[in-house]
Image 1 (tube, rainbow, N blue to C red):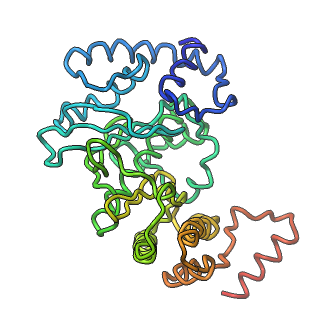
Image 2: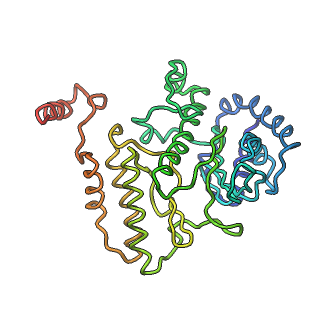
Image 3: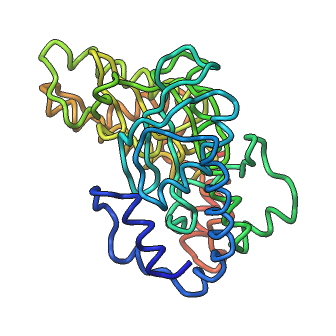
Length: 339
C-alpha cells in the first residue's frame, strides 16, 4: 500500500474528527513496504467476508475493510447482527453502535475497534507497560522466549504482540471490574482487533462524556463518591486507570460509567504508579470542583493510596539506579537502613 493510500486510510477512519497530527501521517517507506502484502490480503479477505456480512453503516472503503476483518469472528458467533453507526472516533480506537445478535439479550452493544497497528504510535506507552506482564490474544501471560525477544527487539511481529497485549489488558480489566460490581461496560468478547461491550445510551444518542455535562447541584456529590468508589475498586484489584478524567467517564440517566482501560498500571510494580494515580485523582477532582465541590485531590489520593498499603515514597528498584551515581548509591544505602 502506498503512502498516499495509508494517509487516505487514516483520513477515512477519522472522517471529520481531524484528530491526527501531521507527524502521525509521516510513515516511512520501509514500514509501508512491510505492510503491502498484508494489506492486500486484508482487502481480499474483506471482499470475501462482505458477501456474507453486510452492515447498515456506510463506511469508507478502507474503514469498511478494517471493520469487516475486525468484526467477522464476532458476527460469526452471533454477538452482533449489524453495525449501525460510528459513535466515537479517536486516535487509538473508534467505537461503533451495533445491533446485538442472538447470543446477547441487550438490543445494542458497542464495538471498540482499535486502529491498525501500523497507524498507531506505540512508542510512548512504556510508562504504562512497565511492571506489566505481556498478555496474548486469550489474556494469558506470554512466556514464550521467542515472543518476548521479538517484543523486546520491536520487530514487526513483536509490535503485533505488543498491540494485542494492549487490547487484552483492556478486556481483562473490564472482566475483573465488572465481576466486582464496578461501573464499567459489560465485556462480551475480544476477537482479533475488537472488544465488544455493553452500550451506554439509546438508539438515537450515545452517552456523553462527563466533561460535556453540567451536573445539577444535588448530583455532584453522590456521583463524585461513585467515581471514587470505582477508583478504590481498581486499587483493590491491583490496578490504576492511568488516564482517568471526566473525558473517560460516561454520563447517562444520572449514572456514570468508566471507560478506556488499556493503559492500566499495577500499583506496586510500576515505579511511576503513585504519580500516575495522583494525576488520575487530581483530574477527577478538578472536574467535580468545577461543579461546586471542594475536594483536596492530594489529600484524597494519599488516603486512598495508603489505605491499600502502598507507600507514597516508594523504594527505588535497583534496575533504575546507576551504580556510578553517588546520589543513587546514597538512596540505595538509605533504603537498606530503613528496612
